[in-house]
Length: 318
Image 1 (tube, rainbow, N blue to C red):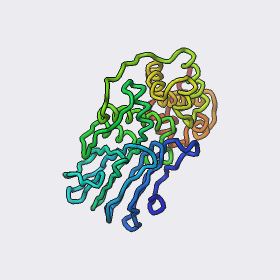
Image 2: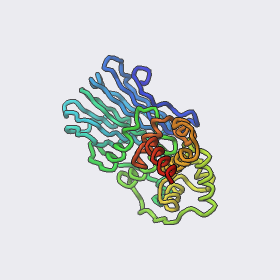
Image 3: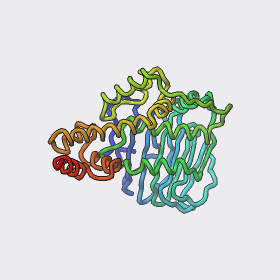
Image 4: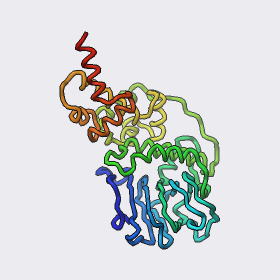
């Protein structure tokens, strides 16, 4: 479908083929739409938008066992929306914004939208879900409950959190996408998984040597091009176990820790050097000055330029 559509700025990462990524595909109403929509193997987030709907139903396929999680961003009348699983038409009503579908790719889901639509689709590999379930103490989850037009507040909220980044040049880092997939995966297991036993509770954090090693790796990869799996492997832990233990030890996620340290590094450069803000952005691990300014303002409350001027004025008077 990508060759017939107009994907925005997101690009597949130039790392391992298993790295997660995001795409934003805008159909223009004139391009032919293939009858089969094939997703890649790793965890992916795809925003698919059309001003005219689909001429015919499409089948969604995955090369690996996975769940398809779809969430609407705008309303669709019941007469303009249909969904099938295993060739069975599922009864549906009006599609309201932020309603969620959870469908196993094994059922070869098909859908049709006869009018303008805007959807976010998550392709969530079962292998990753199995790893999370094992680490949480559930064991292997054999099946997931089918859900169509579910009012899932958790999926709605995390979709709202990722939505502003889809289609932008400063797409979420691999570390952020790994963290996002863990949050989504844990929710899918607990809400939709057919579970055999309750989860065990694990409250332990990282050992001192694991904290040191994780910090070292994050410092060495300020641009966020490292995977959670890489850090977890160095610490001898599974990805989900490492992510939970890291948050227990540091109080925040690995991705949030990295962002905070980027800001701390930027503050150090602004107070100890006279180099430009764009150079500071690059040396602090940001893709560009716009991303640096936006993140700095979110965490500090003012722009980097204003913060630097205030700091310089304050201490020059002292």
